[in-house]
Image (cartoon, rainbow, N blue to C red; front, top):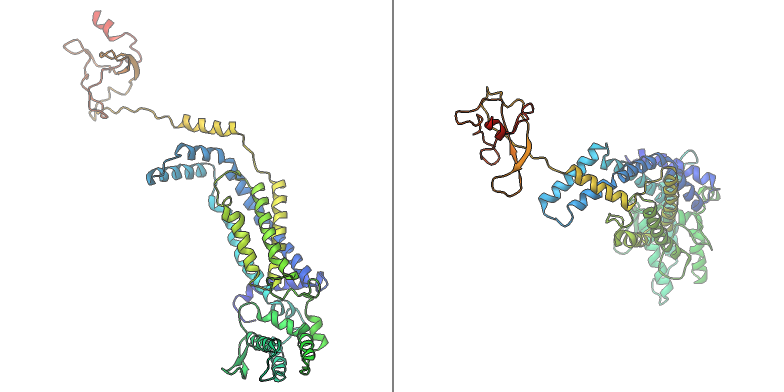
Length: 441
C-alpha cells in the first residue's frame, strides 16, 4: 500500500473490515453493512440537499410563471433575459442553485474509495489491523501453483477442454503478474494487472483454486498440484460464496446461472430507484427536467446492468445494496422534510402576480435650465381629450410662472425629451382653477 490514494482508501478499508467482523466474515452480508454505514455517514449531506430542493420547490410557481411568459420565444436575447429574471428570483429569496450539487461532489471521492476497497479485498480488508499478509508472496505462490499445473498439460492434445484449461492457466498467470515470453514460458514476476480483478483472482486461488484445478486434472488423469496456502491464511479470507457454491468474485456471464441474477437485479433496482426518486422529488412529474427523460428512466439502469457484466459480482451486489439503501434514505428525508405541493390555482396566482409587477410606468423627462427650480412642485394628471377628438387623455403641465404677454402661461415651450414635442402645461396642486376659466377672469 504505497499509493497516495491510500490516505483515502485505508479508512474505508477499516470500515469494510469492521463490516466483515459484524457479518461473520461473510463478504456479501458485509457489503450490505458497508453500504448502510456509508449511507449513514452521508445522511447529513442528504438533509442539506433535501432542504435545498425544498427551497427550490417553493420558488417553482414563480419560476414557471417566468418561463411561461417567455414560452415559444427561443431567440438568444429572450432566453438570456428569462434566465436573468430566474437568477434574480433565486437571489431575492437567498437560493443558490449550486448548493444542491455540493453533496454530490463530496460523494464522488467516497464512491471512488468504495470501489477501490471492494475491488481489493486483501489489501484493504485482510491486511489491516493485524494479521497482515505479504501480498507479493501470495501472488508468487499462486503463480507457482499455476506453473506447476501447466507442467501436467500435454504439449499436443485433441481434447478441447484441456486446451481451454491450458489457456485459462496462462491468462490467470498474466493477471497475477507473471512475465511470460512469446512461447508462454515463465520469465519471472512482474506487477499484477491493475484492473480491479487481480486481487479477486488471488483470493480465488487462495480459497478454492487448488481444489478446482485438482478436480479438473483428476478428471483428465493429469496429476495433482500442491496447495501452497495453509489453513491459517484461508481462514483470514472472507467467505465470498453467494449461493450454490457461486462466488461473488466471479464475473457474471450470459447463461442460466446464479450470477446472471446480479445484472438483472442491478437493472431492476436502478429502474425502481428512478421511479421512487421521481415520486418523492420536489420537481413536478410532468416537468421537462433532466431526470424525466427516457434515457434517465431506462438508459441509465441499462448501462448499469451492462457494467455489471464487466466486473466481479461483488461490485454489482454492492451497487444493488447501495441503490436500495439510497431509496430508503430518500423516503426518510421525504417524511422528515416533505416537499410543498402546489395547486393549479397557486400557479395561476403566481402568473397574475408576475403580470401585475411587470406593468411599466410612463416616465416623461423635461429639459430645464440648471438654475431653474420652477418645476420643483409639479403635478402630472390626465386632462381632457385632445384637440383631435381622439378621446385619448392628454397630459397637462403648469408652472408657478406668471402669465405671458399673450395670456398663456410661461414656459409653455418646454419639450419632453422622449418625443421632442411641446407639451401643454398642467395645473399646480394649489391651483385648482382650469386654465380656460382663469383666462375668462
